[in-house]
Image (cartoon, rainbow, N blue to C red; front, top):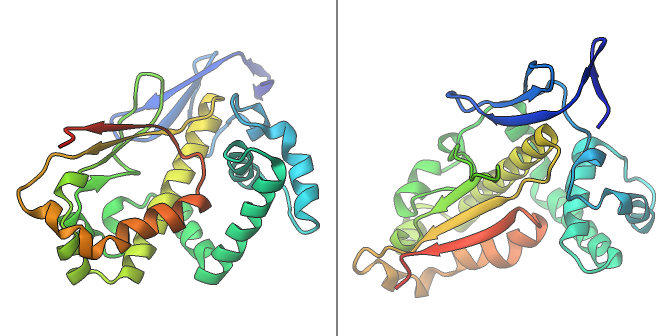
Length: 244
């Protein structure tokens, strides 16, 4: 990418997190650039099919305005579907779904500040029933991929269902996935390469909890069947550990 800061060209860039967890980018001239500073454009991100966005917008019809965040999200839909027609069809479904549930308000809340998982609605009760950190673990793999962890083996869905209504769980998970999408965009634009999560699901079992899955699987079923199609290509790899 041909980037400049003042009169000095930015020759190259690399990124990591500092001790406080802030995403940093250091340019070829040694400048430290924080979130909101100089970043690669979405068109410059290696691994994104941005060359297909013009045709994607044509298929969507009028009213689809271009912006960096819209282009990043739309590129993930293109990446996650075998054809542009299928990508456009799902993207339209997603926009309708977002309007119905008020997802744009959640996106605005996530992107307006530095919300932690603990500040998401019903986070405390959900974490007690299902320990996890899917968006704010603050750890990266050697290749720069952010890491997410779920202690699925310790999930007590009976406790979850008795303490959190399904609709409140759904709202919480939308916060989680919006947070993941926002993190991926910032990391990708800071490094110039597409970043996707490596999710680790730990199946270490606490005796008896796995038996509570059957009657309350609608919580996990909604996550997989309903939510995931609206947030494609967030995950590069899934690792299962301590399987039964």
